[in-house]
Amino acid sequence: YILYVLFLIIPGTFFILTVVFSVTGDYALAVVFGIIMLLTGAVIVMSIYIGYLKVALLICDDEKVRTADLRPTVDEFLRTTQVVILYLAIVGVGLLLFIIPGIIWSLKYYACTWIVLDEGVRPVDALRRSADITNGLIWELFIFGLQSVFLLVLGVLLCLIGITATAPTVLFAATYVYRNLVETAPVDQVKIG
Image (cartoon, rainbow, N blue to C red; front, side, top):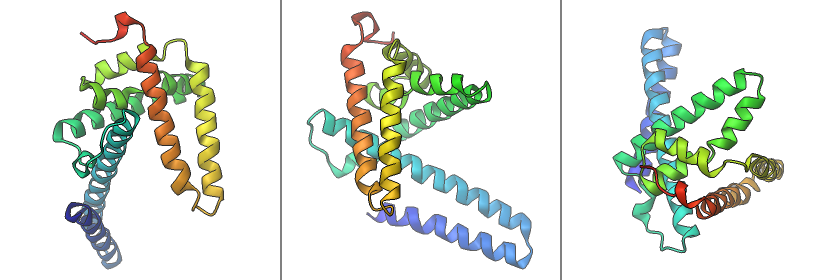
């Protein structure tokens, strides 16, 4: 818990310093502290995201969840960050190419973060594996994505209180879909070699 408190205090401190330096006219320091705040926030968000994915995988496998499972290892953090950056770059380029390729590629590589955490493979191998297990299932994943967005929007419309129920529901549903994709993948696609 001390670690999570520090995760809140450190960015908060940098935010306050950024505001102070902006008000006093020292814009160079404001930019530096703003960048530090942005990077610190990104590390915090990524750490929490990895923890949620690890817990969702454990729950889908009917395994016991421990507090330690919420904290990513350095290797998990680096590999997941790399695969997320690659995924966002691929989807971003696809969205620039008339939107439809971005949607297709976001569905094709949908499982890459779970694969990195579940199988411990390199980011590029996780993208290849995701493409293999989602092959031929883009429409089904698209429908699932629409249903997920509908639930999340419904949660937000319910005065933001509903999102506390719909966000975990969508996370566990997406993890369950990932597990089903892995289990139904053809035998020759089971391992990346």
